[in-house]
Length: 303
Image (cartoon, rainbow, N blue to C red; front, side):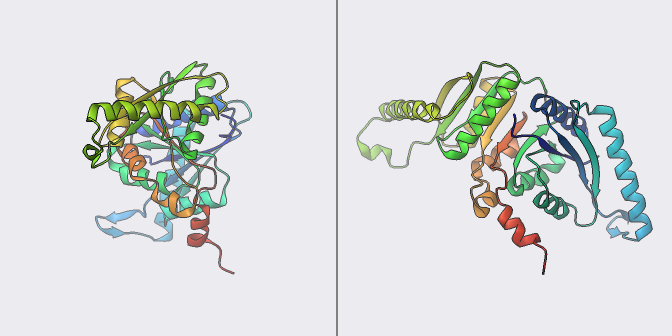
């Protein structure tokens, strides 16, 4: 948990998930001994009546004051950070989401927490895709007392980072075990190999088990043990969500590629679908600064 010292929490001031997100932020701050947490709201230009924005300075200033007061009230009521953790509240109007991205580009956030509900699914997926750091998605009612962690792995570098972070979360709760899941597809044309499908599946899973053991040995999990589960599915994202349900998981951790601006922007179709559909808190792990080069091109200061 040492890597998550500076947190940013997004509030939309419109749903119960704000409370769940703030409480989850409290838990993460306490477990990781966070130094700083920013509570941020990105708002829309206030409307005088449907379809007609009122961007007069007086009304905009009044809206900003009210949004700031609402955010501060929520934080005061529901946030409980560790000693020495500084909390602040900031409201962005005008460009909203773009202001938030520019703020992230200029800042030093290690982790973003954002509440997830049906009305804001598009915003949440866009934030997970473009943020230059790890993002935790918290649905309404998400328990902060997680006991069962599922990690999605494909044996890549980005899933190695996800496993390291999952192990840190496990140690913070004094959990001794986590489950690593690998979903795979049987390739089109497998029947031409002459190997019966069931035998092909068994051979594939034997190879993947061996590959996981090699992958696992390269990562220091600090005493946390792992159970490896491998299942065939034509829809990998769906298999991850089904496995989380099967394991009764209350925290899902997965990696995003994020090695360069393009990969960070694309996120990956499997990760994007899980972000949209996961009913439990989900942590998308990115290397800090992922995609920042692209943000610099979009928002870089002009000479």
